[in-house]
Amino acid sequence: MKRALLPLLLFIAFLGLYLLTLTDVHTYDALSYILDVDRKPWPELFHPHHLAYGPLGALIRAAAASFGWAGSVERLLQLANALAGAAGVALFGALVRRATGRDLAGVAAGLLLGASYAFWYYAVEVEVYTIAALLLIAALWLMLELARAPSLRLAALLGVAQGCAVLFH
Image 1 (tube, rainbow, N blue to C red):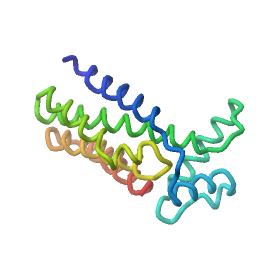
Image 2: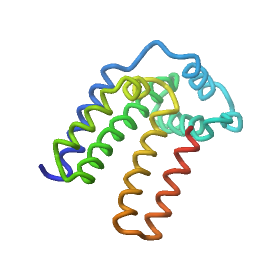
Image 3: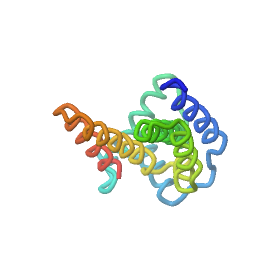
Image 4: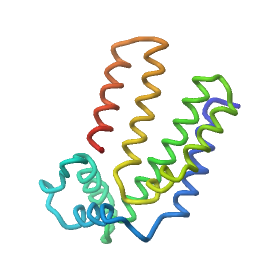
């Protein structure tokens, strides 16, 4: 299978699945994040445990508003999580294929991650975990690459990925 085809197919399949199953019933935390981004001024968006999520929501809302969006940030944050979830599934599938050299292992790993209850649940909700998980999968990829060919650039990228994951959760 061509190198880019596996991650692309996983991304498309899981993005479609996640978009079709976006939730309309939110957790208390999700409602809190939505209300924060919809109502609070910029300096109050920095949640002490999820520093980057509120500002990301505000940036997404501002970008959507520049295109005429006037509604709540709820669906926009769900869309961001669905995109992050699908990207995480694709990246994880590609990572496992790279680590094992087997297409089937990459497909199986992507399918198992993407269809797992916890990953799917947070990919269709307004929560902090999916973006952090994507960043941790990227960090895992960078660790694999760093073990194969150590470089200062890869080490720095690993630090950035890990640091950003911590800022989301």
